[in-house]
Length: 149
Ligand code: FES
Image (tube, rainbow, N blue to C red; front, side):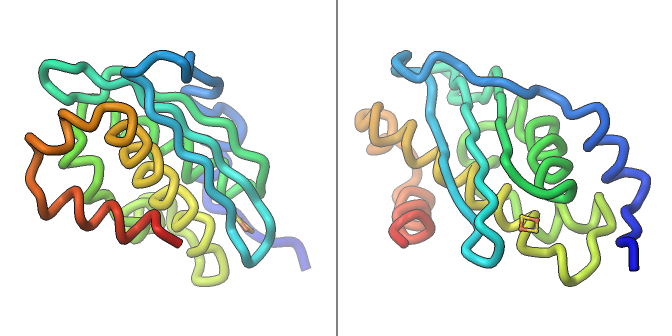
């Protein structure tokens, strides 16, 4: 049977926001590159961070995956732009799944987006260790755990 996608998924899938890449040699750009073991889909996310405010000023993605994964990453880029790193680190896949009305079988697609933003933030901290030490130690520790796997 044909799988029915919610109209919000179709909207993001047919008009994905913020597709592309940023210059990852720039120290203010963090890169997240994650995969979904369940299906092999891959998501790459770049965030540009204002070094003074730690606000995400720009964000781009490229997703090689299903419609729900593309929609999840497109929505994620809209969600995290303008957030601080601490705020963005708290974004949950359930929030994305709810917005896009993803069915249970597609929950892992939104998990890919949560993994991608955590991975990108962690990469930014790796490139800017001084920022990390001034941030809340708890957030940093959580990020380590989330991206250790
Ligand atoms: Fe795996 Fe959507 S089916 S990311």
